[in-house]
Length: 235
Image (tube, rainbow, N blue to C red; front, side):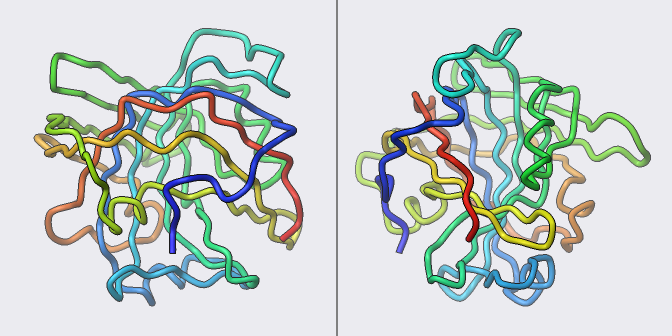
């Protein structure tokens, strides 16, 4: 079961950052639909007999390589489309269906299979309202999204589902026919309830998913940091 705290310390970070103004929008999907999008060796993780896909836009700030070398440029934006998996060892993790990013330097992570795509992204706050928008550069048609959430009350005591949907401590990628895992460490997410006021997106369709059905489960976090990403290693 997912834990609210990191499972292992990251003593040698390859990257540190602050993840700010992050929204978590989740839909339940049929397990077999999500499993069909995963590489051999990974099994879709389930909560209440459903697979879950998360749409998570946020701000990347104070990004440093090796914990010390600042990545050139100001804060930038990133948006993940992700699901939850089990490794052959039984450990849980994140599998990214796609990642939109505003800083081209992050595309270097493609070398370990991170599915980064350069995009024109925006994040704006207006009191309790947080607005996100983005469109992928290049190709056609270009996936895009618009999301507005209203931030509600703080989550004083996260439920099992709150933790399961938001707290994962390793990212899994595939490169050169092999699976790789990257450990992640940060403080527990401070969460609030949130309501979607506007949502249009074509990222899920581009990933090969059927249109999300029903109302999503939505959380917001003002952010965490420093986030420490460790050395990527073979699964």
